[in-house]
Length: 406
Image (cartoon, rainbow, N blue to C red; front, side, top):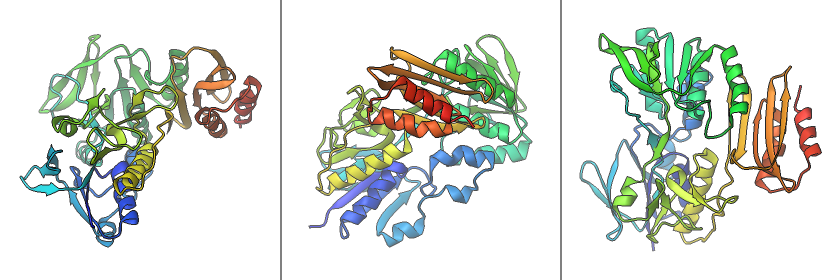
């Protein structure tokens, strides 16, 4: 008997899910809903688009032809506003309703808007969706932007700042923490990256919040910080974090905790016909056993695939995630794994000539936390040792790091 599958969300988890659903079930009805108007694209490449390393068309991972050939009913630019988990019906903003047999919530997350005076003025943008980047590029062209303030020194803010400096702009990053990437690394490690950033022209203001955006002629002209410092700027980018879109699940009575939808080993929610995947899903952390969210593209794709298998009755267990993150900015690769606050024997490796840095925390000859910056070839070794819980020695790790120096 044919079923009706509905997927809310068209990013990594959603697209992996609908693709897998069609592979597993050639006849049933599949529909996907996305609040974004654009066809699915890879959000990991947004900084490359800003930097000019990728063209807009290179971001897209699926197009209209894909959905037509796969017989997937696509609703883009359509926001799902209601969910009746008992009647198994979703409602969209224009009042239409759609029933389902199995539902996947892969609604992702949205950018956090901090409380800042005049934050809605012309010239203030988020750095989260393709539509944000399109608006940024248009504003740059129309206003000859040369100076940019980035609010937030997390991974998104750092990647954003790097992309703008590649384009020759003067960039200042403002963050309330004492150093950049505060959720990922400690102060000493941050100093290495900050010095590298300053060498390419990035300015920093730490231990301060932007409290007010200064306006002239209905446009941005500067910011006023909590330390009373004023910074002149032509444009402001807000990269102050993200918040999962789990409201629809909470309103429908699904179990929600810590800003995420609680799932079991099959990515099933507290309602058996509803699954969750991607940024919005709480899943098992294989290291700590806690329920956590992962914002990694590859984790989301894996979750969407496994959720699809379970939706069609092809039971598969999702073991969980190992928290690692990686990026590339200021001319070097960045990798971090585990909790920076974990105690244990720490190996610090800093090569002054190449400015490569590594900090590895060991416990019982196993890596429990690590941060590498610039050690391209060592990343794969450290990642494998950490994710697979391999026993390694301090000497072996040192050999990996030395071997990564060109």
